[in-house]
Image 1: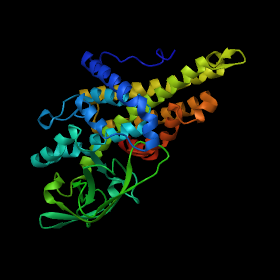
Image 2: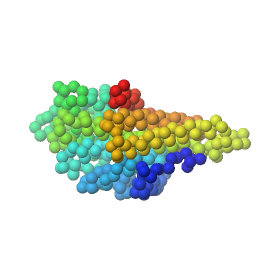
Image 3: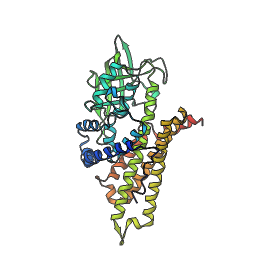
Image 4: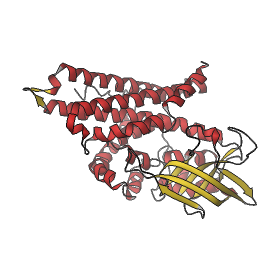
Length: 392
């Protein structure tokens, strides 16, 4: 039943090359990640060596230019990456292992050649860690409300302010930071992007304790008179808002693929348990109420997965205007994270007492649902964003 309820990749979406990459990733995750996620969760971290291991199989450089040490690939490769990494059942590992996927794209798109060469290649080799710092204590999902300031002083900016909920914030070597370089301009105007080196004087980082994603370091950052070279600015001064928003669209699509895969992990664990667990002489899987729960889970997973695969095809073929694409990506994130929430809840219910025990994947994913529904833009923000794009 489990195999039947997991949609087979369609050939007009995924080529043999995509599937070869999938096979490599699946073997890597099964060998190097999945057996260790419980221990890493309890430790609150995972070995830094994992970044280099991921780089060696070509996972880290996916989508970046060859001249920078990357491997060009279409959006379906990134969907494969999200799906296969998420099979480990640990959002914390996946989140931290992939923060370069949100920290580097603005640099790759608009950074100077010198900045690109200094930052991107060592990250893609797994030697350095990159992160993105946009969210602030008072701003949440409202990127245009950035208050962290960067005041020009000769060939440096002096940065003051705070960022919070920053994934890989504790050990990142390079942090792409949203700052306000023109305090006179309200909202989105006047926002710039700066790369702040992790050892910059005046930068302090504090760990945050979380409901889920225990294996991922999450930090509160404080910038107290940090002097950042003007050469570290990404793109044109005062025009960084668009780069961050384009970045968010890619992040939300990746998170959508993660979410329905985590939902699939819950379904697989619940189905396996239901086949083994017997009540009153029969396996749980033969109880109608349980069978219906499993099918309801599969229904939501299939709907979310199909939407994301279709969206990837639309992106590759330019089949949507920009506004429609933003709306559909926002809706995909809502649909996929709701599927994850439903499936985690149902899986824990099916597992019963075992679902409440640490060590089951469903218990971990149940705790990690909320960060997926909030991170990258909350469900409420996503719905409002979609409504605006559709002119509602």
